Length: 491
Image (cartoon, rainbow, N blue to C red; front, side, top):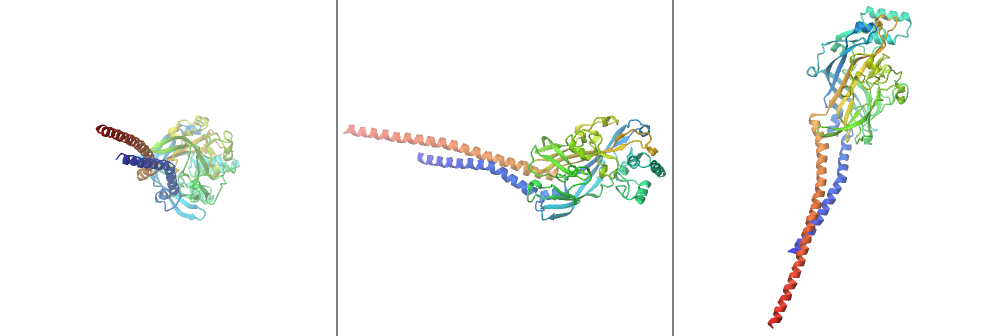
Protein backbone atom coordinates (compact mmCIF):
# COMPACT_ATOMS: atom_id res chain seq x y z
CA UNK A 1 0.00 0.00 0.00
CA UNK A 2 2.82 2.42 0.95
CA UNK A 3 4.51 1.75 -2.39
CA UNK A 4 1.27 2.71 -4.16
CA UNK A 5 1.14 5.96 -2.15
CA UNK A 6 4.63 6.90 -3.35
CA UNK A 7 3.68 6.19 -6.93
CA UNK A 8 0.51 8.28 -6.63
CA UNK A 9 2.55 11.11 -5.04
CA UNK A 10 4.98 11.03 -8.00
CA UNK A 11 1.94 11.21 -10.33
CA UNK A 12 0.69 14.30 -8.44
CA UNK A 13 4.14 15.93 -8.55
CA UNK A 14 4.20 15.48 -12.34
CA UNK A 15 0.63 16.90 -12.56
CA UNK A 16 1.68 19.86 -10.36
CA UNK A 17 4.70 20.62 -12.53
CA UNK A 18 2.49 20.52 -15.65
CA UNK A 19 -0.06 22.82 -13.97
CA UNK A 20 2.67 25.34 -13.03
CA UNK A 21 4.02 25.12 -16.56
CA UNK A 22 0.50 25.71 -17.98
CA UNK A 23 -0.06 28.69 -15.64
CA UNK A 24 3.33 30.18 -16.55
CA UNK A 25 2.62 29.67 -20.25
CA UNK A 26 -0.72 31.47 -19.78
CA UNK A 27 1.08 34.54 -18.38
CA UNK A 28 2.93 34.83 -21.70
CA UNK A 29 0.21 33.60 -24.05
CA UNK A 30 -2.75 35.37 -22.34
CA UNK A 31 -1.72 38.96 -23.17
CA UNK A 32 -0.82 37.86 -26.73
CA UNK A 33 -4.32 36.39 -27.16
CA UNK A 34 -5.93 39.59 -25.79
CA UNK A 35 -3.76 41.84 -27.99
CA UNK A 36 -4.58 39.68 -31.00
CA UNK A 37 -8.30 40.08 -30.26
CA UNK A 38 -7.86 43.86 -29.91
CA UNK A 39 -6.10 44.05 -33.28
CA UNK A 40 -8.85 41.97 -34.91
CA UNK A 41 -11.59 44.12 -33.37
CA UNK A 42 -10.10 47.57 -34.01
CA UNK A 43 -9.52 47.12 -37.75
CA UNK A 44 -12.24 49.04 -39.65
CA UNK A 45 -14.12 46.12 -41.14
CA UNK A 46 -17.89 45.51 -41.46
CA UNK A 47 -17.24 42.00 -40.07
CA UNK A 48 -16.28 43.54 -36.69
CA UNK A 49 -19.86 44.19 -35.71
CA UNK A 50 -19.37 46.10 -32.46
CA UNK A 51 -16.39 48.29 -33.39
CA UNK A 52 -17.65 48.93 -36.94
CA UNK A 53 -21.06 50.07 -35.66
CA UNK A 54 -19.32 52.26 -33.08
CA UNK A 55 -17.26 53.86 -35.81
CA UNK A 56 -20.06 54.18 -38.38
CA UNK A 57 -22.94 55.50 -36.27
CA UNK A 58 -21.18 56.70 -33.08
CA UNK A 59 -23.88 55.34 -30.72
CA UNK A 60 -22.48 57.36 -27.79
CA UNK A 61 -24.77 60.32 -27.02
CA UNK A 62 -22.89 63.47 -28.00
CA UNK A 63 -23.91 66.94 -26.84
CA UNK A 64 -22.96 70.45 -27.79
CA UNK A 65 -23.34 72.99 -25.00
CA UNK A 66 -23.24 76.61 -26.11
CA UNK A 67 -22.54 79.61 -23.86
CA UNK A 68 -23.08 83.19 -25.04
CA UNK A 69 -21.14 86.22 -23.81
CA UNK A 70 -24.04 88.64 -23.41
CA UNK A 71 -22.75 92.22 -23.77
CA UNK A 72 -23.86 94.36 -20.80
CA UNK A 73 -22.57 97.78 -21.95
CA UNK A 74 -22.81 98.16 -25.76
CA UNK A 75 -23.16 101.99 -25.62
CA UNK A 76 -20.11 102.37 -23.38
CA UNK A 77 -18.04 100.07 -25.66
CA UNK A 78 -18.77 102.42 -28.57
CA UNK A 79 -17.34 105.22 -26.41
CA UNK A 80 -14.09 103.31 -25.95
CA UNK A 81 -14.83 101.75 -22.54
CA UNK A 82 -13.88 98.22 -21.52
CA UNK A 83 -16.47 95.60 -22.60
CA UNK A 84 -18.44 93.90 -19.81
CA UNK A 85 -19.89 90.47 -20.54
CA UNK A 86 -22.07 87.98 -18.71
CA UNK A 87 -22.03 84.30 -19.59
CA UNK A 88 -25.44 82.90 -20.53
CA UNK A 89 -26.09 79.21 -20.96
CA UNK A 90 -25.61 76.40 -21.44
CA UNK A 91 -27.96 75.91 -24.38
CA UNK A 92 -27.59 72.18 -24.98
CA UNK A 93 -28.03 70.35 -28.28
CA UNK A 94 -27.93 66.61 -28.83
CA UNK A 95 -25.62 65.86 -31.72
CA UNK A 96 -26.42 63.04 -34.11
CA UNK A 97 -23.42 61.84 -36.13
CA UNK A 98 -23.65 59.40 -39.01
CA UNK A 99 -21.15 58.30 -41.63
CA UNK A 100 -22.40 57.96 -45.18
CA UNK A 101 -21.00 57.21 -48.67
CA UNK A 102 -18.66 54.66 -47.02
CA UNK A 103 -16.32 53.25 -49.69
CA UNK A 104 -13.51 50.76 -49.08
CA UNK A 105 -10.44 51.03 -51.35
CA UNK A 106 -7.87 48.34 -52.31
CA UNK A 107 -4.99 50.24 -50.60
CA UNK A 108 -6.45 49.54 -47.11
CA UNK A 109 -8.22 52.91 -46.84
CA UNK A 110 -11.88 53.82 -46.52
CA UNK A 111 -13.53 57.10 -47.46
CA UNK A 112 -16.74 58.57 -46.04
CA UNK A 113 -18.64 61.75 -45.34
CA UNK A 114 -19.82 62.38 -41.78
CA UNK A 115 -23.14 64.13 -41.40
CA UNK A 116 -24.21 65.95 -38.24
CA UNK A 117 -27.53 67.22 -36.97
CA UNK A 118 -28.36 69.10 -33.78
CA UNK A 119 -31.52 68.86 -31.66
CA UNK A 120 -32.23 71.28 -28.81
CA UNK A 121 -32.51 69.64 -25.36
CA UNK A 122 -34.57 72.00 -23.12
CA UNK A 123 -34.27 69.73 -20.06
CA UNK A 124 -30.46 70.00 -20.08
CA UNK A 125 -30.33 73.74 -20.89
CA UNK A 126 -30.25 76.76 -18.58
CA UNK A 127 -32.77 78.61 -20.74
CA UNK A 128 -34.67 78.40 -23.99
CA UNK A 129 -33.86 79.19 -27.62
CA UNK A 130 -36.22 82.15 -27.27
CA UNK A 131 -33.87 83.84 -24.73
CA UNK A 132 -32.61 87.20 -26.03
CA UNK A 133 -28.86 87.89 -26.09
CA UNK A 134 -26.71 90.84 -27.23
CA UNK A 135 -23.42 90.07 -29.03
CA UNK A 136 -21.17 91.99 -31.45
CA UNK A 137 -22.51 92.08 -35.02
CA UNK A 138 -19.93 90.14 -37.02
CA UNK A 139 -21.35 91.43 -40.30
CA UNK A 140 -20.60 95.03 -39.29
CA UNK A 141 -17.61 94.94 -36.93
CA UNK A 142 -15.92 92.04 -38.79
CA UNK A 143 -16.44 93.72 -42.16
CA UNK A 144 -15.09 97.02 -40.77
CA UNK A 145 -11.73 95.41 -39.92
CA UNK A 146 -11.66 93.62 -43.29
CA UNK A 147 -12.25 96.92 -45.12
CA UNK A 148 -9.94 99.17 -43.10
CA UNK A 149 -7.33 99.41 -45.90
CA UNK A 150 -9.83 100.27 -48.63
CA UNK A 151 -10.11 103.92 -49.85
CA UNK A 152 -11.92 106.25 -47.44
CA UNK A 153 -14.75 106.85 -49.94
CA UNK A 154 -15.42 103.09 -50.15
CA UNK A 155 -15.54 102.87 -46.37
CA UNK A 156 -18.10 105.71 -46.25
CA UNK A 157 -20.18 103.86 -48.83
CA UNK A 158 -20.03 100.64 -46.79
CA UNK A 159 -21.13 102.59 -43.70
CA UNK A 160 -24.06 104.02 -45.68
CA UNK A 161 -25.00 100.47 -46.78
CA UNK A 162 -25.07 99.35 -43.12
CA UNK A 163 -27.41 102.25 -42.30
CA UNK A 164 -29.69 101.45 -45.24
CA UNK A 165 -30.17 97.91 -43.93
CA UNK A 166 -30.39 99.09 -40.29
CA UNK A 167 -27.37 97.01 -39.26
CA UNK A 168 -25.74 98.32 -36.06
CA UNK A 169 -22.53 97.31 -34.27
CA UNK A 170 -24.37 94.99 -31.85
CA UNK A 171 -27.07 92.39 -32.41
CA UNK A 172 -29.88 91.67 -29.98
CA UNK A 173 -31.51 88.44 -31.11
CA UNK A 174 -32.87 85.19 -29.72
CA UNK A 175 -30.47 82.29 -29.09
CA UNK A 176 -32.20 80.30 -31.85
CA UNK A 177 -31.70 83.10 -34.40
CA UNK A 178 -28.04 83.64 -33.47
CA UNK A 179 -27.37 79.89 -33.64
CA UNK A 180 -29.20 78.79 -36.77
CA UNK A 181 -29.70 82.00 -38.70
CA UNK A 182 -31.96 85.02 -39.07
CA UNK A 183 -33.22 86.93 -42.10
CA UNK A 184 -31.06 89.92 -42.93
CA UNK A 185 -31.55 92.37 -45.78
CA UNK A 186 -27.80 92.98 -45.82
CA UNK A 187 -27.05 89.26 -46.19
CA UNK A 188 -29.53 88.97 -49.07
CA UNK A 189 -27.99 92.06 -50.70
CA UNK A 190 -24.40 90.75 -50.33
CA UNK A 191 -25.31 87.29 -51.62
CA UNK A 192 -26.97 88.85 -54.66
CA UNK A 193 -24.28 91.37 -55.62
CA UNK A 194 -21.13 89.88 -54.02
CA UNK A 195 -21.70 86.10 -54.15
CA UNK A 196 -19.16 84.02 -52.20
CA UNK A 197 -18.31 86.78 -49.73
CA UNK A 198 -20.32 85.12 -46.95
CA UNK A 199 -19.98 81.49 -45.82
CA UNK A 200 -23.71 80.75 -46.11
CA UNK A 201 -26.11 81.66 -48.87
CA UNK A 202 -29.28 81.54 -46.75
CA UNK A 203 -29.83 82.96 -43.29
CA UNK A 204 -26.86 84.26 -41.31
CA UNK A 205 -26.15 82.39 -38.04
CA UNK A 206 -23.08 81.32 -36.05
CA UNK A 207 -23.84 77.59 -36.56
CA UNK A 208 -25.94 77.84 -39.71
CA UNK A 209 -23.37 75.89 -41.72
CA UNK A 210 -22.99 73.20 -39.02
CA UNK A 211 -26.52 71.76 -39.02
CA UNK A 212 -27.41 69.10 -41.61
CA UNK A 213 -23.90 69.42 -43.02
CA UNK A 214 -20.91 67.13 -43.39
CA UNK A 215 -17.28 67.67 -42.39
CA UNK A 216 -15.87 66.93 -45.85
CA UNK A 217 -14.67 63.79 -47.58
CA UNK A 218 -12.30 61.92 -45.25
CA UNK A 219 -10.14 59.01 -46.44
CA UNK A 220 -8.61 57.10 -43.53
CA UNK A 221 -6.58 53.90 -43.07
CA UNK A 222 -8.48 50.76 -42.04
CA UNK A 223 -5.47 49.24 -40.21
CA UNK A 224 -5.85 46.02 -42.21
CA UNK A 225 -2.14 45.90 -43.13
CA UNK A 226 -0.75 47.81 -40.12
CA UNK A 227 -2.81 48.39 -36.99
CA UNK A 228 -0.59 51.37 -36.07
CA UNK A 229 -2.21 53.29 -38.95
CA UNK A 230 -5.84 52.56 -38.12
CA UNK A 231 -8.07 55.71 -38.22
CA UNK A 232 -5.18 57.90 -39.47
CA UNK A 233 -6.18 60.39 -42.17
CA UNK A 234 -4.83 59.67 -45.64
CA UNK A 235 -6.57 62.67 -47.27
CA UNK A 236 -9.35 65.21 -46.66
CA UNK A 237 -11.40 66.48 -49.61
CA UNK A 238 -8.72 64.89 -51.80
CA UNK A 239 -5.94 66.94 -50.13
CA UNK A 240 -2.98 65.41 -48.33
CA UNK A 241 -2.05 68.88 -47.05
CA UNK A 242 -3.86 72.19 -46.54
CA UNK A 243 -3.27 75.57 -48.12
CA UNK A 244 -4.57 77.87 -45.36
CA UNK A 245 -1.29 78.41 -43.54
CA UNK A 246 2.20 79.78 -44.20
CA UNK A 247 4.46 76.77 -43.54
CA UNK A 248 4.35 73.13 -44.74
CA UNK A 249 4.39 71.97 -41.10
CA UNK A 250 1.24 73.95 -40.23
CA UNK A 251 -0.48 72.74 -43.40
CA UNK A 252 0.08 69.07 -42.54
CA UNK A 253 -2.97 66.84 -42.03
CA UNK A 254 -1.85 64.78 -39.03
CA UNK A 255 -3.35 62.01 -36.95
CA UNK A 256 -6.88 60.68 -37.06
CA UNK A 257 -10.28 62.23 -37.77
CA UNK A 258 -10.62 62.79 -34.01
CA UNK A 259 -12.95 59.96 -32.98
CA UNK A 260 -10.68 56.95 -32.40
CA UNK A 261 -6.94 56.32 -32.33
CA UNK A 262 -4.66 53.32 -32.92
CA UNK A 263 -4.50 50.83 -30.01
CA UNK A 264 -1.68 50.09 -27.54
CA UNK A 265 -0.98 53.62 -26.30
CA UNK A 266 1.64 54.49 -23.75
CA UNK A 267 2.15 57.58 -21.60
CA UNK A 268 4.59 58.79 -24.27
CA UNK A 269 1.88 58.63 -26.96
CA UNK A 270 0.15 61.79 -28.15
CA UNK A 271 -3.32 62.26 -29.67
CA UNK A 272 -2.97 63.99 -33.04
CA UNK A 273 -6.16 64.73 -35.03
CA UNK A 274 -7.34 66.93 -37.87
CA UNK A 275 -10.25 69.31 -37.19
CA UNK A 276 -12.01 70.73 -40.27
CA UNK A 277 -13.77 73.29 -38.01
CA UNK A 278 -10.44 74.65 -36.72
CA UNK A 279 -8.92 74.24 -40.23
CA UNK A 280 -5.81 72.57 -38.79
CA UNK A 281 -4.30 69.53 -37.09
CA UNK A 282 -4.03 69.55 -33.31
CA UNK A 283 -2.21 67.34 -30.84
CA UNK A 284 -3.07 66.51 -27.24
CA UNK A 285 -0.55 65.24 -24.68
CA UNK A 286 -0.76 62.75 -21.78
CA UNK A 287 -1.67 64.25 -18.42
CA UNK A 288 -2.62 61.46 -15.97
CA UNK A 289 -4.14 57.98 -15.61
CA UNK A 290 -7.69 57.44 -14.34
CA UNK A 291 -10.70 55.11 -14.37
CA UNK A 292 -14.25 55.28 -15.74
CA UNK A 293 -16.53 52.75 -14.05
CA UNK A 294 -13.61 50.38 -13.49
CA UNK A 295 -12.12 50.77 -16.98
CA UNK A 296 -8.54 52.15 -16.97
CA UNK A 297 -7.97 55.30 -19.01
CA UNK A 298 -5.34 57.90 -19.90
CA UNK A 299 -6.32 61.58 -19.92
CA UNK A 300 -4.91 63.66 -22.77
CA UNK A 301 -5.12 67.46 -22.68
CA UNK A 302 -4.15 70.43 -24.85
CA UNK A 303 -0.53 71.52 -24.30
CA UNK A 304 0.01 75.19 -23.46
CA UNK A 305 1.67 75.57 -26.87
CA UNK A 306 -1.50 74.58 -28.80
CA UNK A 307 -2.61 78.18 -29.45
CA UNK A 308 0.68 79.90 -28.54
CA UNK A 309 1.85 82.56 -30.98
CA UNK A 310 4.98 82.30 -33.14
CA UNK A 311 7.04 84.35 -30.69
CA UNK A 312 6.33 82.03 -27.74
CA UNK A 313 6.44 78.82 -29.78
CA UNK A 314 8.37 78.96 -33.09
CA UNK A 315 6.59 76.04 -34.90
CA UNK A 316 3.33 78.05 -34.68
CA UNK A 317 4.82 80.88 -36.75
CA UNK A 318 3.02 79.42 -39.79
CA UNK A 319 -0.39 80.11 -38.17
CA UNK A 320 0.36 83.85 -38.01
CA UNK A 321 -0.29 86.79 -38.45
CA UNK A 322 -0.60 86.26 -34.70
CA UNK A 323 -1.86 88.31 -31.83
CA UNK A 324 -1.29 87.39 -28.18
CA UNK A 325 -0.58 83.76 -27.22
CA UNK A 326 -3.75 81.74 -26.75
CA UNK A 327 -5.42 82.88 -29.99
CA UNK A 328 -5.56 81.03 -33.30
CA UNK A 329 -6.18 83.29 -36.27
CA UNK A 330 -8.66 81.39 -38.47
CA UNK A 331 -9.40 84.29 -40.84
CA UNK A 332 -7.60 82.50 -43.70
CA UNK A 333 -10.20 79.71 -43.66
CA UNK A 334 -13.15 81.87 -42.63
CA UNK A 335 -13.55 84.19 -45.63
CA UNK A 336 -10.91 86.55 -44.14
CA UNK A 337 -13.22 87.67 -41.32
CA UNK A 338 -11.16 88.61 -38.22
CA UNK A 339 -12.18 85.54 -36.23
CA UNK A 340 -9.97 83.90 -33.57
CA UNK A 341 -10.34 80.56 -31.80
CA UNK A 342 -9.14 80.19 -28.21
CA UNK A 343 -9.83 78.13 -25.10
CA UNK A 344 -12.98 79.35 -23.28
CA UNK A 345 -12.51 82.43 -21.07
CA UNK A 346 -8.99 82.73 -22.53
CA UNK A 347 -7.79 79.79 -20.41
CA UNK A 348 -4.04 79.15 -20.99
CA UNK A 349 -3.78 82.44 -22.92
CA UNK A 350 -1.79 85.65 -22.41
CA UNK A 351 -3.27 87.25 -19.22
CA UNK A 352 -3.48 90.60 -21.05
CA UNK A 353 -6.52 89.26 -22.98
CA UNK A 354 -8.41 88.98 -19.68
CA UNK A 355 -7.61 92.61 -18.86
CA UNK A 356 -9.39 93.86 -21.97
CA UNK A 357 -12.77 92.27 -21.09
CA UNK A 358 -14.63 92.21 -17.78
CA UNK A 359 -16.57 89.12 -16.69
CA UNK A 360 -14.19 86.27 -17.56
CA UNK A 361 -12.95 83.68 -15.09
CA UNK A 362 -10.90 80.82 -16.62
CA UNK A 363 -10.43 77.51 -14.76
CA UNK A 364 -9.03 74.20 -16.01
CA UNK A 365 -12.02 72.15 -14.76
CA UNK A 366 -14.57 74.25 -16.64
CA UNK A 367 -12.59 75.48 -19.62
CA UNK A 368 -9.75 73.03 -20.36
CA UNK A 369 -10.30 70.44 -23.08
CA UNK A 370 -9.56 66.73 -22.61
CA UNK A 371 -10.03 63.28 -24.12
CA UNK A 372 -10.02 60.18 -21.88
CA UNK A 373 -8.78 57.20 -23.89
CA UNK A 374 -8.75 53.49 -23.16
CA UNK A 375 -5.03 53.04 -23.96
CA UNK A 376 -5.26 49.39 -25.04
CA UNK A 377 -7.88 49.97 -27.76
CA UNK A 378 -7.53 53.70 -28.59
CA UNK A 379 -11.28 54.18 -27.99
CA UNK A 380 -12.29 57.45 -26.24
CA UNK A 381 -14.35 56.82 -23.11
CA UNK A 382 -15.02 60.46 -22.21
CA UNK A 383 -14.53 63.51 -24.43
CA UNK A 384 -14.85 67.23 -23.83
CA UNK A 385 -13.66 69.55 -26.62
CA UNK A 386 -14.12 73.18 -25.59
CA UNK A 387 -13.44 76.14 -27.89
CA UNK A 388 -14.28 79.83 -27.93
CA UNK A 389 -15.09 82.06 -30.89
CA UNK A 390 -13.73 85.61 -30.68
CA UNK A 391 -14.06 88.66 -32.90
CA UNK A 392 -11.25 91.18 -33.30
CA UNK A 393 -12.86 94.64 -33.20
CA UNK A 394 -11.51 98.19 -33.43
CA UNK A 395 -12.44 101.67 -34.57
CA UNK A 396 -12.24 102.07 -38.36
CA UNK A 397 -12.44 105.63 -39.65
CA UNK A 398 -15.18 106.18 -42.21
CA UNK A 399 -17.29 103.35 -40.78
CA UNK A 400 -19.19 105.31 -38.14
CA UNK A 401 -20.79 102.12 -36.71
CA UNK A 402 -17.43 101.36 -35.06
CA UNK A 403 -17.64 104.56 -32.95
CA UNK A 404 -14.60 104.85 -30.68
CA UNK A 405 -14.29 101.12 -29.97
CA UNK A 406 -10.95 100.27 -28.36
CA UNK A 407 -8.93 97.53 -30.05
CA UNK A 408 -10.07 94.29 -28.40
CA UNK A 409 -10.40 90.56 -29.05
CA UNK A 410 -14.01 90.13 -27.99
CA UNK A 411 -15.36 86.74 -26.84
CA UNK A 412 -18.74 86.00 -28.47
CA UNK A 413 -19.57 82.37 -27.61
CA UNK A 414 -17.88 79.26 -26.38
CA UNK A 415 -19.04 75.72 -26.92
CA UNK A 416 -18.28 72.27 -25.58
CA UNK A 417 -18.72 69.08 -27.57
CA UNK A 418 -18.89 66.21 -25.12
CA UNK A 419 -19.83 62.57 -24.90
CA UNK A 420 -18.99 59.50 -22.88
CA UNK A 421 -19.47 55.77 -23.33
CA UNK A 422 -22.41 54.41 -21.35
CA UNK A 423 -25.09 51.72 -21.42
CA UNK A 424 -24.69 48.43 -23.35
CA UNK A 425 -21.46 49.54 -25.06
CA UNK A 426 -19.84 50.30 -21.71
CA UNK A 427 -20.97 46.88 -20.41
CA UNK A 428 -19.51 45.08 -23.45
CA UNK A 429 -16.32 47.08 -23.05
CA UNK A 430 -16.19 46.26 -19.32
CA UNK A 431 -16.75 42.54 -19.98
CA UNK A 432 -14.20 42.20 -22.80
CA UNK A 433 -11.50 44.52 -21.51
CA UNK A 434 -11.75 44.39 -17.73
CA UNK A 435 -13.50 41.19 -16.63
CA UNK A 436 -12.04 38.74 -19.21
CA UNK A 437 -8.39 39.86 -18.71
CA UNK A 438 -8.98 39.72 -14.92
CA UNK A 439 -10.40 36.18 -15.21
CA UNK A 440 -7.43 35.20 -17.37
CA UNK A 441 -5.01 36.67 -14.86
CA UNK A 442 -6.83 34.91 -12.00
CA UNK A 443 -6.66 31.63 -13.96
CA UNK A 444 -2.95 31.90 -14.73
CA UNK A 445 -2.00 32.67 -11.11
CA UNK A 446 -4.60 30.11 -9.94
CA UNK A 447 -2.93 27.39 -12.03
CA UNK A 448 0.55 28.34 -10.75
CA UNK A 449 -0.64 28.38 -7.10
CA UNK A 450 -2.56 25.10 -7.51
CA UNK A 451 0.44 23.49 -9.22
CA UNK A 452 2.88 24.59 -6.53
CA UNK A 453 0.52 23.48 -3.73
CA UNK A 454 0.09 20.09 -5.46
CA UNK A 455 3.88 19.66 -5.81
CA UNK A 456 4.49 20.54 -2.12
CA UNK A 457 1.71 18.28 -0.76
CA UNK A 458 2.64 15.42 -3.12
CA UNK A 459 6.32 15.78 -2.15
CA UNK A 460 5.38 15.58 1.56
CA UNK A 461 3.18 12.52 0.90
CA UNK A 462 6.01 10.91 -1.11
CA UNK A 463 8.52 11.66 1.64
CA UNK A 464 6.23 10.14 4.31
CA UNK A 465 5.48 7.13 2.12
CA UNK A 466 9.19 6.50 1.66
CA UNK A 467 9.82 6.97 5.41
CA UNK A 468 7.06 4.53 6.41
CA UNK A 469 8.37 2.14 3.75
CA UNK A 470 11.81 2.20 5.43
CA UNK A 471 10.19 1.64 8.87
CA UNK A 472 8.28 -1.35 7.49
CA UNK A 473 11.43 -2.93 6.04
CA UNK A 474 13.28 -2.29 9.30
CA UNK A 475 10.38 -3.74 11.31
CA UNK A 476 10.20 -6.93 9.26
CA UNK A 477 14.00 -7.36 9.57
CA UNK A 478 13.82 -7.15 13.43
CA UNK A 479 10.90 -9.57 13.46
CA UNK A 480 12.87 -12.09 11.35
CA UNK A 481 15.90 -11.85 13.71
CA UNK A 482 13.63 -12.43 16.76
CA UNK A 483 12.03 -15.49 15.13
CA UNK A 484 15.44 -16.97 14.35
CA UNK A 485 16.65 -16.55 17.96
CA UNK A 486 13.48 -18.16 19.34
CA UNK A 487 13.95 -21.15 17.01
CA UNK A 488 17.60 -21.43 18.02
CA UNK A 489 16.80 -21.34 21.77
CA UNK A 490 14.08 -23.99 21.54
CA UNK A 491 16.47 -26.34 19.87
